[in-house]
Image (cartoon, rainbow, N blue to C red; front, side, top):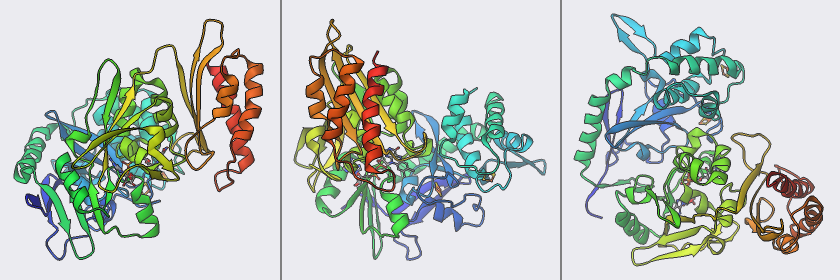
Length: 486
Ligand SMILES: Cc1cc2nc3c(=O)[nH]c(=O)nc-3n(C[C@H](O)[C@H](O)[C@H](O)COP(=O)(O)OP(=O)(O)OC[C@H]3O[C@@H](n4cnc5c(N)ncnc54)[C@H](O)[C@@H]3O)c2cc1C
Ligand code: FES
Ligand code: FES
């Protein structure tokens, strides 16, 4: 395809770095940022722990130009492929301190971590410092909840979190000016230079074993999709990368849709909310706080900040995982999935889009382009729940979402119940819904409905839970929903 470039450009150490993938010594395009950094002399602070996004030891910060300002977000570099850096600033722990009058000046986050004894063995520390650096750049005086939220993706086994939280709190309440704000104008100029030089070209990074395309807009994405029907689409790659890292797979053809403006917008009108498929879950979490509280609640316990800063809503839908935390709720909201190909655009209800275990209605030449959520009627109670072994950063054992409308006599006028983790796809409890409809919404009726629910599903036993625990939890979530709807 014409108008493509083989050169990846980003900022590291205040310099514009260019990697030309036409050169024989270029790394493979799916080299992770973690592996790339560990191979550099000056960037060994970043650590490899789990390689699947669970420990946070590899956390780095990406700076991105939006509306004339740089936005900073923490991500786990073990999940990020090099092309995701294109047009961005990569910041590692080595970049936080600087030399002044022949003395090393530490960043406020580093200074307070040291002063408050926020580190012992230190393996997790660079990742923690980077998560807190992103917090420092995004919040003045963060609440304890905001600090904890920034740290859910960082495991520390020996220091304990209290001194780390204290260090974050002190550093973020100080003067927000740091070396990055002082250099911001110069950094913006460099980012603009990269964008101008790139001149709206898609990336085509090709070597003997891989073709990696990063289209610049939707039309190019759909052209690549049509030309390379076997290619894997990636957005945040949080579903794909762990599989590649764990099983050392090599993807042959990749189309990366993570930076396409048409897939990153959100808007609303009187009836609906609209999200481009590549909208990040962290952006969705912020947006949903006032508009869709059930979605906000579930996103609060979705992965970690670093994962939500990469993962997209379209990626979650396309994964069609039976334990997706979003799908049950998207069923409850009657979400509509827009799919696009070069020739066509159509919209499919989520219940028809999910076809089986990790199967969807998506055709080979299509991508998900938009997710629409109708604005829920105000008198509905809508709630979502997640049962997992840990509250944060854990895969669901089961999940569930509910929608309820009562009439003035406290009778169930409308109810919808969807469970995840109880079958090979998120599934409605139709018999339980039937039983509850037009009955009094009281505890006795709900307890009777719990016995019906018991017969509706045949969950499996696996590493996360045995079948009986799943059934018990499913029954109890229904009761919890009843209690919380009072
Ligand atoms: C540490 C960790 C924690 C996690 N925690 C949770 C959790 O709490 N809850 C949960 O539900 N999930 C969780 N996940 C799974 C994953 O993060 C989510 O499913 C995420 O939403 C996937 O989005 P993505 O953009 O990263 O998808 P990707 O990995 O980029 O893609 C996933 C799949 O979707 C396809 N795809 C992506 N975008 C499109 C599109 N627009 N059109 C067509 N196909 C597309 C890809 O081809 C691929 O098959 C976690 C993952 C990790 C690594
Ligand atoms: S190495 Fe554990 S999250 Fe990346
Ligand atoms: S300081 Fe040792 S694991 Fe955190």
